[in-house]
Length: 477
Image 1 (cartoon, rainbow, N blue to C red):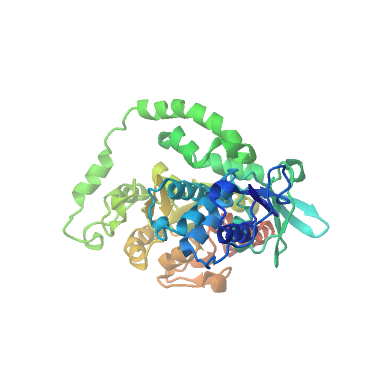
Image 2 (cartoon, rainbow, N blue to C red):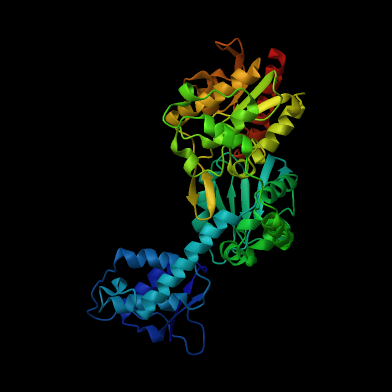
């Protein structure tokens, strides 16, 4: 038995060098072995033989090299032997890698798929926790990948969280990013990573708010989020309770009596002429009438995929109007504006700015939820200029009825709806802009932008600027 020693579990270069030597020496797969550490040292082990006389140089297809680099990361103990068996066979079967039904090829492809899946799960389920050290803010994560994918996956985090100083600790090794250089280190243990941080409760609240019991499929959820990862996910602690309560919540939704037909909406629709535009055929005289009429809006195609139109809410004569982009997933289902995660951020910022949400009229530039399906999820999609222009009729009607003195626009789409022109929010934010009806507009960012900032310091700074913009709006009143 000829045995070659490798420097580590993922020593691809060492395996390739040894496998090439075995192949040139004519060592058959059943006589070749690989072990981590020194090579031949057993009672029946033989040292690496010299190349066979007349052995010709050989090459393998690039597809095999790429496959081998993936399979080497698999945790199976016989992966080196499988790869050498394929290498040996390629000498007589140069098209072997194209035969995906071959048992060895299929086995290798299956292991490579498992490695790729483990890398994907690492990207999805790593949870950083914040600590402070002598160098300042440091984000640390503990993760136990199904296969040895740390070195393969770490560059993704370096690209994704360039501005953060972070460490990912695993039983196989550790990855460190200082903002400039990605470095690898020795294996770590769970106690070397923090157990929790102050952001965890915020994240749990956000996760729970996105849970929809009517869409729950436990088996599908566990297929995408296997239980083996739960122990390191803070939100996983909520799953058993959310699942347990889902049946009761769903039953209550189903057993709730159907609402009576909306008589006022039917009356409103009867007054509208479908062959004429809204400008010519119908002008709402109250906010309630406008809210009913928007359900029949066909000014653009967005109504086709939305659950309902969502108009603004607030006092009939509010001095301050806040305009967002469009309803989100939760707003589309609930029929009320700013009730999702971005709405909670807005509520907290308003409170900090000294503004009572009950005194504010909140609405959106576009009244129907524009999205694209991604599996069972509905992903937000930015409305087009044409869709914003089509929906401006409703926003103008709200402005005419409410007559606000100050209008705060959240993001570029909202600014387009109010100002009828494209703007760069970063250049024009925070200052009053005179409008033709005598009101003033003030531009700022959308609260959802704050939720997407990964760096805590940057997020805190942008949130302070957002609150300052709201205070500026209050001063304009």
